[in-house]
Image (cartoon, rainbow, N blue to C red; front, side, top):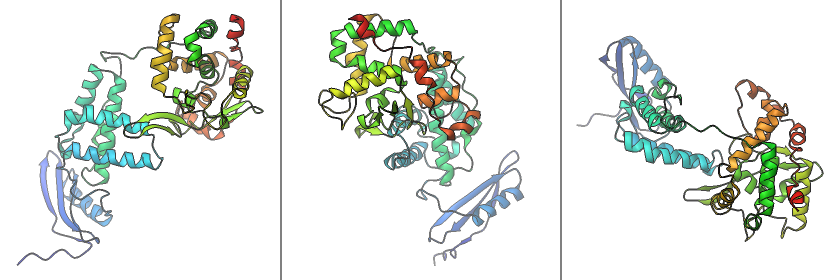
Length: 394
């Protein structure tokens, strides 16, 4: 005759095991009010403490968010797939950027799963996870290693929430400094004001660059410090001529399985008003007067749609930089240039962060983020770049 099930909301006999030096595991079966029976376990330094923690876990029981099949014996690859599915659901609801999902998916499938995919979650010790991160740091860069660590942290946090792990082992991974990396990140380089004027003059004199609509786009980068996707995602409805403002409302990215999409931005501080230098306002007014439509992007493709960032970079910008002798300049260089010029003009880190859309310049400055004051100091500082090199060239 089969054993009768446990009454709803009760647990079976608690069994305690000595699993290591000052390490005990207490286990029992618990039947939730949903009718499912779960294996519950907790660890501590003594038998009594482990049993107490187990009783507290049963008392405060919350059903796992995932299937009860995810346990400490589940392979990391399976838990990683479940975690990624949760991220995709968050992106669908607009709580997370699809670009972030793609980054984590790439690291999960390209690095974490090949290295640790067959590992059982209970085997995910800080030593094993730390060894992978340090190997990535030494073979690639500290930045890559930090991304891998973020993926591991997300997977293990998910495992904790569904009851497959008791604590997140990634919290015990050491710092990942770049000084020991084989490929150290290159130092970001900014253009000087003189180089900006020279570059703009060469843009205006280059027929291929003009045909690709680069002169105005580059001026827009220099006036706003916007990311590439933000600038390409700027719509005419975002431009306020009287207030001399452009409000960042979207960021154009390409997401796996979804194609080209326009999301709300990279950070919580992305949606922001940016005061414009007078020369940029004039440029946009002139551009608006000849625009085919005011319903779409300020810098559209030849078909009137939002331009693809990779196409602009690879087909138009890179060939121009080779022809002009500025092959070291990327679109990110313009953000660095804007930040450097604003810093030289005496703006605070918080003011610069608000212009560039950085959510966290430092922990202390986060306190002042709520003000979101719109200062014209940035626009005035960038007013030195008169943006009229095309007139001088003529």
